[in-house]
Image (cartoon, rainbow, N blue to C red; front, side, top):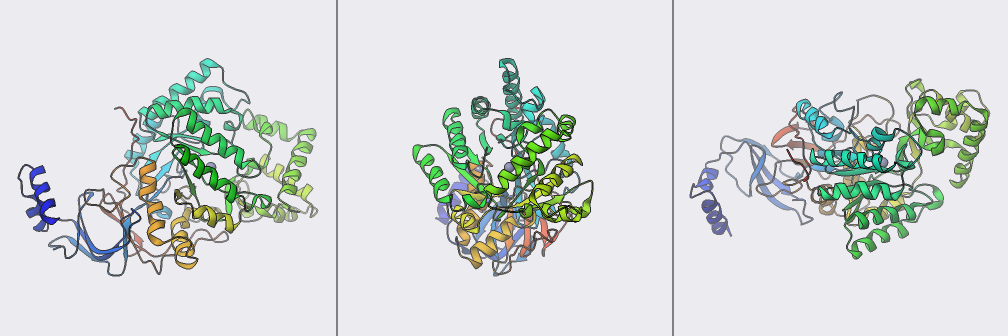
Length: 530
Ligand SMILES: [Zn+2]
């Protein structure tokens, strides 16, 4: 094998003996004595790994390091950097370009623009990211909600034909400027006002540009199966690969239904549709407080919403619908709904709606708690954490082999608010709680789902594997010590155990400390035309 690869290398470089140069120790960094898990799902093996420039150039034992920076990683795992396909970094990248929460959880690449929310002018945004330089690589989707809003605002209606064509043009432009696909957020305004045919038309534009469709589905609770069917149908009709985002079962009465939802994904793949899913390893979700309010109240922008929420008849209707939803959850109080960040009064961060209602001196009744939510909405709304899933479903979904791990988080501003811990601990939690402690999946399998599976699905070429010639996005960690420390009560805590992280061949973490290096690149989708 060695002779063969030597021959290939020599002939491919027109007889320049680069193999001999390689033996002259012309490397930048050499990781010595690691346990390599290459991201393919194959078993670990002992090896050194040599990096030159932004590439992995040699994987074998006993590499002569010469003048290269040599790092002894005896007993540690060398794996590809993790790829987080579901993030929302817009607006936070400029505050914290070092992306510490991701980097210190082993993430070297993020895909942003999810849940229908992105910049509309993708070309400009990618240029901005390129000049800003983050510590992580970034790819982006084009978000349906923002495309729709750019054309018809937050109107609660279908677009007419000329508006539809404008939306198609915006998606086409975004794909040609480098988006990796189209995302929807069908529980959010204005995406929730769209019908399936609108999404199929836009997905066809993304498909024409070789992109994928990432769906925050219309429902993740009572109607989850219908919502999955819709996502699959869009894939079939638009002939586009589908990624179903943050796959889950919300609400106690839906617990256990992963035994119905996961088989739908299996059946779709059997039919020949490229459907995969992703998941964050927690039993609480996190999103805007507005998702507690009926959609029709939220149309036409903030001023209209405010005016509506002050009308007694609307307040009554909203309270009734919120109480109905609470009953469906089989709960007596809004204890499951916790404020993560309320700008108007940050002392409420970390408190449940039930607690806040009592703090405001109101009666301990769900009706008044619903009223408290309306009051908070009138004061600008809030980011929320909702405790509504079961660990049995989280584990059942985790066992599905074409499910990847994704945080659904942004770049965290250290110490700000009480955000969901998933932004700090998604990967380390999988590796510690679900791999090491509960043994739900093997270490090699978990790493495959964090690396080569997302790279393949999102067409992030040259990444996601520790192979010679691949780009050197590398994580070195201690499989016995890796752990998430971020909790709901105390979220601003970095994960532990990630000893070294390389992004494009540069050391961004050394001895578990961020070096401040910002070597992340912008990653373009396959539809890009310059
Ligand atoms: Zn989402």
